[in-house]
Length: 428
Image 1 (cartoon, rainbow, N blue to C red):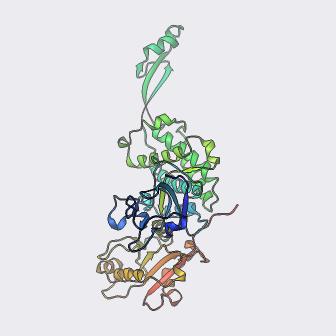
Image 2 (image 1 turned 90 degrees about the vertical axis):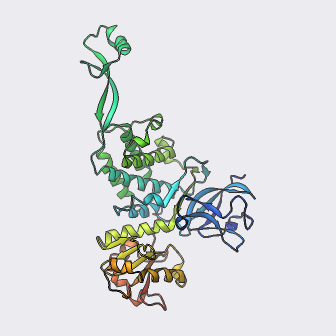
């Protein structure tokens, strides 16, 4: 086993990291599947063996994982984005601007805090924004309702009896000292200052400190959301111990609170429950992954939902599958394709076939409200590093503006493509 980190980029062969594996490794088999519980179509692989080829290859999933092989033992591998300096915080925040998106946002990534950490600090600009963006939107949604209360145990030296008297403590503090007007009691109080709420607030405080150290165009917006959440929790303390986390019964709390507490634990564990660690470089990373095609899809979804309110249908079922987006007013099909080099290549025939199937789907005709045999415009959207406009700028104009020869795919009727600029981090 080696702990030396190797790194490749999305869609590269593993050999480009200097590691040579046999065409088929007995332990790795077809590759490292990240979500084996998913259906075969929805499974994601960190690296996968390509049939009839001599190497395992990365997919469009980034992150850091332990790779367990028969040939070389266990070693850590990082897969980095092909597009450099992505402003992940801005992308995550944009995804979550769609109020329906945060419910499925967890499918974009997974973090394994139970496995051995990997010595790697190159993902700090990815992992912290990821967790925090998700967390503050879950908390924001939670706080749209009244802050949940519960009965909490408390004790105090009171002037009159409340709950039950703690005989031994009352004897020491009051009876022996002649304080007959005092009674030391233990009682239950119905309050919002519960251990769950204290954990949520403490993680918000951590999040604010972390966000302020991230060079992102979305920093101010994120801090503003956190401050708004903190103002709604004024009656809650942020004093909570690591030991208290162990006694929370996850199955006994509501799902929205459970989601917030789970993410809060991630944040507090990541910085060892010590806010002074926020300013330090994190030398080790828990194994994690991010599905970049799904992130790009949600990023575009967040922009479309805000740009064309009430007009966009997301992943509606047809007979031939689930197109990413349908535009009711434009009567068009929109699909995201996370292929950074697509501008320099001819559109892949598989993309044309997939969207052509959607455009002939009778269920999708009904959703769009068009007559049978209508030729439906198909638009696919891809990331373009060289694009002059970001997603918000592109979709500030009517969608029908993109159904013109400037964006048309050569040789195919009513097929168009749009390159979107990916947000980049602010340089120091």
